[in-house]
Amino acid sequence: MNFNKSEELFNEAKKYIPGGVNSPVRAFQSVGMSSVFARRGNGSKIIDVDGNEFIDYICSWGPLVLGHSSEVITKGVEEVVKAGVTFGLATEIEVKIAKLITEACPSVEMVRMVNSGTEATMSALRLARGYTNRSKILKFEGCYHGHSDGLLVKSGSGTLTYGSSTSSGVSEDAIKNTLVAQYNDIETLNAVFKAHGNDLAAVIVEPVAGNMGVVPAKEEFLKIMRKLTEEYGALLIFDEVITGFRVSYGGAQEVYGIKPDLSCFGKIIGGGLPVGAFGGRREIMELLAPVGPVYQAGTLSGNPLAMHMGYNALTYLKDHPEVYTNMEEKANKLEEGFKKAIKEFKIDATVNRIKGMLNVFFTKGKVETFEDVSKCNTEIYAKYFKLMLDQGVLIAPSQFEAMFLSHAHTEEDIERTIAANREAMRQITE
Image (cartoon, rainbow, N blue to C red; front, top):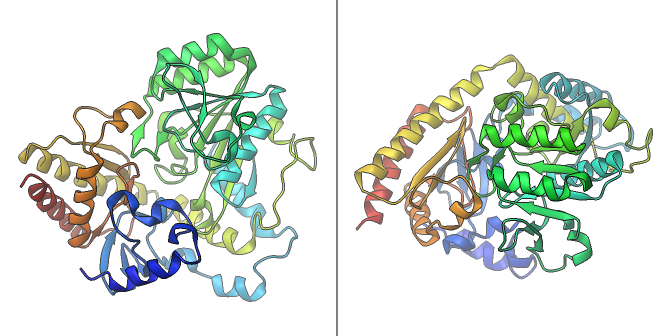
């Protein structure tokens, strides 16, 4: 394929934008390429600036459950734009979508809109500290909760340690109250609570880790987490920025049957526009300003355009549960096709899947922890990515990101992807 225009734009972009991109994964660095610049999207396809067409499994990193340029989601947008996209005042649509979210997630009795997943997790943690009057939080290695300072942390060499920053510019003071444990490791989880349980304000976790590939939490891991937080008086926060309204209408908490104290949501509730939210029990949420002492604000929070598109999306998903069945069936078919090729060509690889999310890991054995993920062969993945791209299939330009299905993907898309995967696997072994 020809990427001349993309390369030209990327070189120009680097003069004015750090690294040529406004979010690091778009740089395609980990697969040894220049950025691919999108021009438009329709349904399951993306067309780039060079005119190349791809079956898209990035789906804007998850929110495009109904595919690109869905008429369902964009219906009425022109009227909203003409009426005004921001007022700095409350609007009726904010109330309507808040009601929808609380109806979808029984753990969420009240919800506050924000503008990104980072804002949602940052604000939820501030609220948890205000509610518990404690300072420490626990996160898990490999789980990404946005780029606020206190969450840019990974664990050290021990099984239990205070974190060390994964970004320059984050001070020791910002992360001194952040503890890190290993994902899906019950022994370490118990050790954290034994040592620090009475000082923990909250535990924050991705119930399905979507930023180290697709690594679902073990059910027992989450159940023990729920039990320990209740026992020690800490709050349990589910980061459902990726999974909320994607793995099911009620999110991962519905799939696992576990009610967190607070939940964080992302761009799906804005139909793909920049938006986030956090919500939970009424007694906790009513500590937020203006009724409580925990301050949080945002001029564009709940803006009419994002709320309108989000309301369209959530209403459709509520009325059409077959969307989730359809995505899971297609993802299952992909998983089976991928595994068949892995077995045929005797490649050290495994496939993780939950509902309409999946990932191919180039490593031996199961992938259940960050340590497992860290053993993946990223050089082979880079080759695999390019082979898939050359056949018109766009997957994540990183071994550590998910593939997302949408309702717009067709049976033909799935068959083409399975065939492309087989050919890519064949060429890898040559």
